[in-house]
Image 1 (cartoon, rainbow, N blue to C red):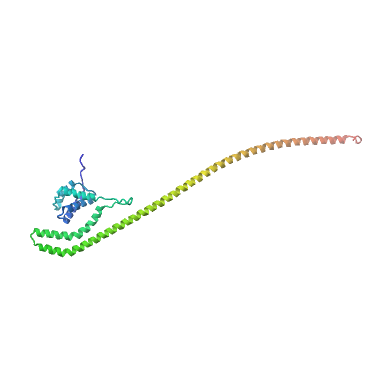
Image 2 (image 1 turned 135 degrees about the vertical axis):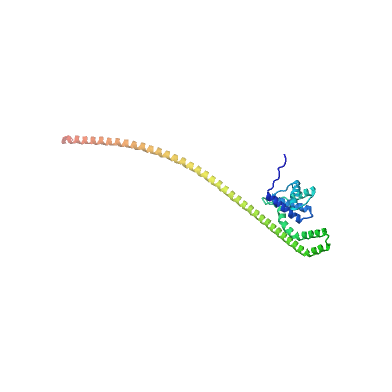
Length: 277
């Protein structure tokens, strides 16, 4: 099964063509640096590093359209690809979860600064090369190079100063990143401690709820027992009240009987003659 065909949009091809022209102007006689710049431009536009065949086709089919004629050897192209692959993003191992440091992005950030600083030197080399090819006197190029040397020195110093500032900013970002990681770790420990205390409170609340449930069950049993005793006492009191009512009725009957006997005795005494008493 063959590899999938690489398809780029018109905007990507136009950006690649402009990048080829710019890199050719920056490195007119250095194929290695030209290839490094070309691979970096293609990677910045497409987001990946391709094989040697892709860059050879770019140099064969696309580069002539912008007036660039470069024919580096296959080993030179392969070495440039290996250098680009060595600049893949790496992750720091000492801090978990830290963001990758992309050396290629750092190189791309520094490339305009260095390119601006070295532009006069490249222009001087091109003028010297053009003068020698046209048979011009070599002293004229030397005079121009000597005249531009202070400018080159100032440009290089400015480039070094910018690079130092970028390095300081990068170090500051790393320090802030370390502080952020430390704060995250402290926050994680605080959250873990709070979670532990919450779990302990939940366990204590569970134990208390279990005790309350057991006490409630005991109270329900006690209430049931008291109700049974109350019912028994009520039945006993009702029975005793009925017995007392029966006894009271019997006593009333005896009292009525005694009253009748007393009345009869009185009547008998009242009917007897006085001498018979």
